[in-house]
Amino acid sequence: MGKLFGTDGIRGVTNREPMTSETALKVGQALGYLVRRKAARPRAIIGKDTRRSGYMLEEAMASGLTSMGCDVILVGPMPTPGIAFITENMDADCGIVISASHNPFEDNGIKIFFKEGMKLSDAQQNQIEELVFSGRLPELLARPADIGKVWKEEDARGRYIVFLKHTFPGDMNLEGMKVVLDCANGATYRVAPMLFTEMRATVTSVNTEPDGENINHNCGALYPEELAERVVREKADIGLAFDGDGDRFIASDEKGNIVTGDQVLAICARHLKDEGELDNNIVVSTVMSNIGFTRALKGMGVRTVQTRVGDRYVFEEMNRTGAVLGGEDSGHIIFRKFHKTGDGILTALQLIRVMKKEGKPLSELSKVMKPYPQVLLSVDVREKPDIEKVPEIKKAVEEVERSFDGSGRVLVRYSGTQNVCRVMVEGPSCEETGRAAEKIADAVRKVLGK
Image (cartoon, rainbow, N blue to C red):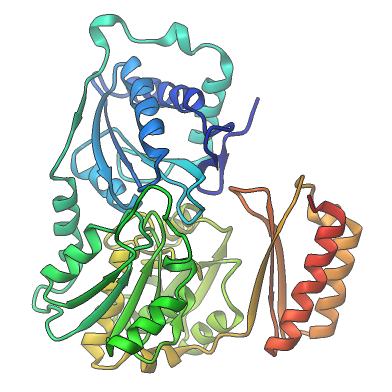
């Protein structure tokens, strides 16, 4: 059986497997069949980001779903967490997002939510994969009288904005606050400026003119440097950079310093603890979290639990432990009180809530943790063998770890969505960390490089 799903849904280069119309049609059919077994007349939501290929894949998914007797509601460009919310809000049986998140425009992807706005479990992904490759889908199609309908919902964006507003204290607004938004020419390009303007902030928006190809191009959460410069130039209070599908963000403080996801987690963890709202005194993070984060939370008396990379794994662990806060250094952060998935705009509002409640600028709040110097390198690879079984890479890692003698750490892992090996090194100084990361990346290139 083939493998479709990676860390966060299905993803790849458009018009190459698995991101072809044919496969999207089959995935839609498999999903439609599964939800049809649970509801007499199932309903699916389909949203997308701003990639040109979104039209093609949206139509293919809708065709697959309707052929299995599922009605389809198209909501157009919307952030991934917005689709998760709308799926539950409109009592749909599943929600689909056509997006490759932070990847370049040539890529696209399919993310799926079930009825309660939760991402698929590994078991559910396996069910879809089994159906796609089984050859049985043609015999499972709905009768002609049961074929589904397709219509557009124009009010989805408004519903999501109302939801976001309700996560912010009702006795508070953003009047007098200057905010710079970088929407990455992606799915937040309408929602974010509209929301912050309605909440009375003075808003400067950049990268809000998508053309189908410029999503994530030197902008957004992966490239926050332009945002930081703009914040200083505009004398703004905060800058917010979202990624292409809006499920994560990176902030800039008023002095132009980049504030990472780990720092935002630490700020919110301390505030929730002080307010008596940090249930079970636990914060869930991933193996990519900075050493400085775990040390900062330990100093607060807060326990951290680590998971695999991926916000669905973070949410599963939050459910298991009863944690209300969890996330990743990349900016995927979950506030379980409000949502079941990472939401960049929601997280930005919660960070601003802390700033307003404590009456402190972001530059002051971010001192809650001191990040260790971190270098993350990506190496294109032709295959993905078990890293522990590649002697050259294992040797390079061991040598670096011995040289750090407990004052740093190394993580080497494959991307779940691309043929890429990630080399992450944290160390006592920028220079040492950079050298160590290059040493390991060179070993990866020599053995596995394209």
